[in-house]
Amino acid sequence: MSLPQVAIVGRPNVGKSSIFNWLAGQRLAIVDHVAGVTRDRMTRVIEYDERYFEIIDTGGIGINDVDDLSNEIEEQINYAISTAQILMMVVDTREGVTGLDERIAKRLRGCGVPLLLVANKVDHEKYDIETSEFFRLGLGEPTIVSAKSNRNKRQLMSEICKALGALADLPLDTVDEPEMKIAIVGQRNVGKSTFVNTLLDEPRMIVSEVAGTTRDSVDVRFEMDGKSFVAIDTPGLRRNKSVRTDIEFYSTHRAQRTVRYADVVLMFFDASRRISKVDRQLCHYVESHYKPCIFVVNKWDLMSEHMATERWAEYLHENFTAQWNVPIAFITAETGRNVKRLLSHAQMLFKQSRDRVQTSELNRLLRLAVQNHPPSLNARGKRPKIYYAAQIGVAPPTIVFKCSNPKAFSNTYRRYLLGVLRDTLSFGEVPIRMIMEERGSTDSKNLVDAAQEQPET
Image 1 (tube, rainbow, N blue to C red):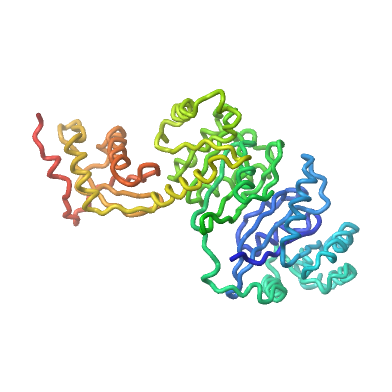
Image 2: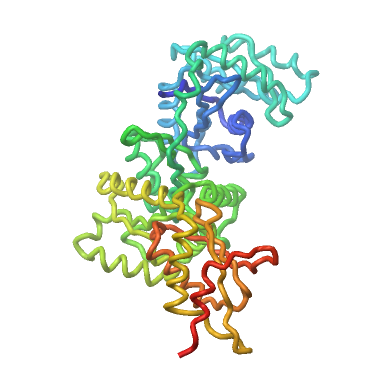
């Protein structure tokens, strides 16, 4: 069931993104003194007193964008206004009523939906009297708040729910939890936002040839085959030494946080460009956090006549040898080619990462592995022993090996064990976290040791 939407609108730098973060209870949108930071619509589901609605952050109305994206930003604002059940106009009490405020109020009055006027930046009640001038906007009595000072949050939430009325009275079981959270990452201009728009079949994200158009990590809910998903479009990343502004720094930080938050990561490459240092850094970040990943080669329509998919796959494997098991998808986001197949594969990885193996099956497999290839003797002529293994977690599948001396197992042998697990269990395409621990004095289990007592031949 779709949720009622509350669009936060207003001129630049009145605190719309601050209020969005404040109501969401998280630092989601970038807040900066530079006007025009927010470009795309950002959304978040809010629960208040067992009532549900979705808030939407928008760009500043009337902004002159430095990258000449003013028309695209205005289209995003218009779409948010046209689909919202409530419009929440934010004004800056410190600056008072401006001519742009008056023009925006006039525009909103003709939309035919309930309007809430929110006077922001009223950090102390002694400044409440200064909000009286906003009555002349013709939007009724302003709700006085301060996102920075956490003032009157409950009052604002109550006003929103009052304006929504029965629209927000949704039973808990009708508010679908997403089946899977998908992070869409990659360097700039590889087609991530185009991919999101294709998923939704609407211009949800601004698409432009200007590098760095997307600045925030933007959550987008969509449905496929009756299931709810969240796709998270992230800012295109740059090399660290190229991150020169606060906005770029926080964009990079949010993209990395999105990787940590996601269930599956779609790592985008442009088929017409070479793999870069940024790609390698990002793939290493995904690998280090044990996230299921698909390498997505986008814009394949530009290369399909000149190169076989096998050559690009070989190129990826040569550059990311530690991620040889990561599946590869070739798509054209603009036309939707292979997009549904990609999402189906992402669901498979999601299920793999949450699978469990029985301890008995795991140790049977481990006995065979050790028997076929025992660990090497140490300097004193003794062979380190593995006593038993058990899966202790999922997402990622986490397997602990209880052994006599963890440091005695070489990296080569650890990779051998990991390969055995990947080849024989249901974790073939997802990262596995493998932990070698010394067996405690009170632990009497010895499920593998018999296979290690074989005499030398």
